[in-house]
Length: 103
Image (cartoon, rainbow, N blue to C red; front, side, top):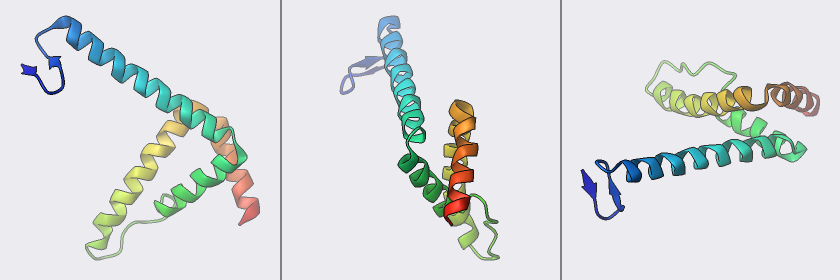
């Protein structure tokens, strides 16, 4: 299947391989960015605030349809946390310790 606008042909092995390479490089860059952020004290404070805004460490149940919205927020936080644990779990523990002292 050819997508002329994207210059991508799913039937062409070279096109598929090129797209896979670009996706892999983008994922590696995103991982490196998160590790860099977590290595900065300010970055850890930012991530901690983000996880709090996502209500990651709270119940999302409200008894109303707001539960669905909060579950969406929580899902974002869980994805960020999963990446942190996968890439730099030691920095997650450090972040938690630093931020508990500040608040």
